Length: 534
Image 1 (cartoon, rainbow, N blue to C red):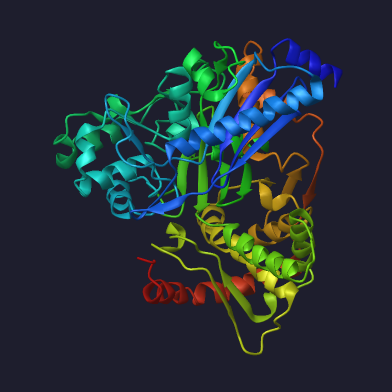
Image 2 (cartoon, helix red, strand yellow):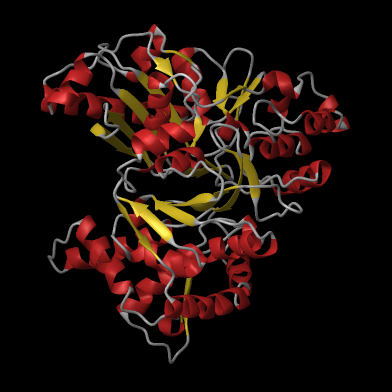
């Protein structure tokens, strides 16, 4: 407490903010890189005119609420009013599409990573570049708008992502970290600038040349970890802190996506390390020793915060269907006048899954709330299917739903590990689904065939990772790399546990996957006969 108080009094505490898919979180850390205070705000995307989106008003309501909760906790625990900080970092859900005109007006509602509407553009650009461009990438959204001749494209003066937008408004600087920038447009080796040859190919397209803007002029400047992205302006301080106590001049770390903050939060920034982030979506990232033999639709190539090349398998849906089922069970409990509590409900039912048959006893679940590019789905429908003679138990029900959260990831990672022979010594798990100790870690190890480690900080996730990037920027020693900073200062004495793949679990998961892939036609049929509500 005393060390934390001194750090706060000296104005050296560092704040990390992350705008996730269901929650906005803020974490304030001290000299030992452990949380001093935290704040959280729940929000939800909505489907508007065929696009998943959030309003910019909701962005600022959520950020201010998080910051206020952090400030209130600091005042309550330490008796200090937050005025100065050593640094701030902002991260958000990856990529998406936020185009602005010359006056700073948003030209179309924010199109999130969850949208798969840019499939045509992604396919054409992938062929043009000989490089996989996923539909969620910013350049795919932009080119799809070009193909669709959307009126707003003519007026674009600046294109950014969600965290890039927030840092722009707080500092006045139009910048992005190398990792998130690599999901706007491919970077050259080293991650210092956008790939010049691919940029030339894009700019030479006849459809693109019809517009007054040039792509290099409307993209954010690229920064790498450790650089200063800008300073908090007076106007920005008022946007962040409604009380007016926060002082201007605080340095910002380069804004990054949740992929990169996940890497940092698990110390997965060196070659042959990797991590699995399991929350609203799920993705695996592996830092590469060498390039892939060929591009794959299922695998995205992007950068770490320092510009190292990494491969990612990203799946649009992970926890939403699990959350929906557990909400239903909680509602039943309330009808029976039983109060359980969310943490106990999740803990008990996740542990129950380990009692189920290794192959789920004839139950099959699909958790697809939207399209899944990895398996070629343009849209999805959550399904639970069983044979009449299935062992329909609570344990098998829970195990099938947890398997469903990993199934698409397994399909993509098989390409990475088997076809491309990418080597990874260990995967690190983080995110909300790892809060129940040992469950998802054990199933994930079986699904991936790789040892899975979980640090005790796994539940802190992305906002803590962003706070660490801000701490590296604020407290970097001369010549110190991000990799050395994490290894020698942050994770030197980190506690955690490692789970090796269990043979029977692995065989059961493989049997489940055989049925899962054979029955994918059920998804196509469900989408066809169950269209979205008008």
